[in-house]
Image (cartoon, rainbow, N blue to C red; front, side):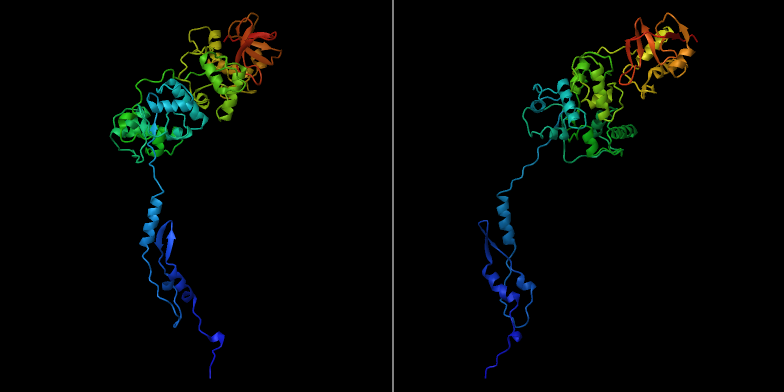
Length: 442
């Protein structure tokens, strides 16, 4: 009699019993043209019930797979070390300088002189980089990347190094001398109190962490880490010519004004005359850069315009702003004092150079700088001063009775005044018939 076990009670081989023969039969797999033996570990991690037919599987050594894969990868992957970035600065020479000049679109003479310095500073300003005139890693990157090893050599450049040496209080040696040279302080090679103070001041000026330590970020702001060869970090012994910043204001003229106008672009004609259009463009630039909107082109405004043009050596014809004479007549002293505010914008209610002037604010402030107190508004000044029929330099010119406007008489037919909104303190024609003149008689 045959006894048939019901299906649901029959013992079934588990998953391991099913897949083990298949895995065993496919142990050799071809990978990239090389035979790769795979270790089979399924049988060692899954346990079958007692009585299940499981073929024993021998695990292959994983070293065979690793070696074959490494051989394949090594045959196709190449590694190229990054080129050492050479920083260029004023005084550098050689083929690398020519490459720089070619990228800047200027004459390629291989000499980092005034024209190259100006072009670098302009480029840095356009790219919102640190405007220091030094072509370091960041500037090279903005120029399209460092060109790599060049022939011909360079002079005056510095080399970046992956292992930056930190300097801090107590450090000493040649690297400290290099730091001190860049900071413009005594180069004694000792990181003492004076060097610490200079480092902290520099970090504050550049908006860095003020910790007094010279690490990668501070080195970068100083022109790049000099590396191990500190002999290449010395700057040229001669200063770039004409790098003492000249301030321009309304009424200035000359080559410097022309250079400024070219930087301003737009509708400003490069005619060398600092007139209303130039003034409006300067004020717009200052507003866009978050600078005080004075209309006066000082160091900060030159920087915002791309840097002071060191290659322009001619001296501009700037309106006279002499020191107030101590031995002239009172009228001469009043005019000399008032000329210092030429170019300050008209601001209704304004009474300081920083905040702007209205007509009577200018006259009151000018007199106050000479130790003379007069009332604030034009009508009150008209009543306060002694009326005269024949004006002299320094007398006040009044319009209206009571006066609604006032200026300072300069010469026949001209006065110095803060005229009206949209204009600046200027010397202008006496455009209407004055109602009278006033003189301070003590």
